[in-house]
Length: 137
Image (cartoon, rainbow, N blue to C red; front, side, top):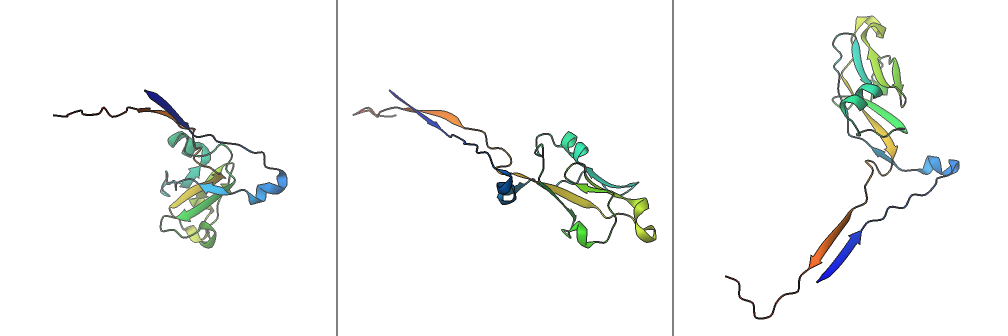
């Protein structure tokens, strides 16, 4: 009997400050945990992490916000209380012009690649030689 071991090895390298801008960004899924009814639309990082554990990296590089129909938040013209990688995103109804309410937004975060983190895979395969003149019934 032969035992074959296969594995995947991940190698991490240290990126210098000059390489940070060249680092590839991998995006999370889109998140929409709140609706703009009440005080506004709150897609805060703390709330998202509580609701979606291990789905957002510890230090996001970027954040994107868009309406549920996909229009980028920056092009809407609404005022945002928070829109950053530390706190997340918040649109407050009382801060909007002409008494309008916030639209319903979704957010996603750019994380260092690979994201989600790929865990090494280790598995074994057993090779069983075929027996000559064996009859299967």
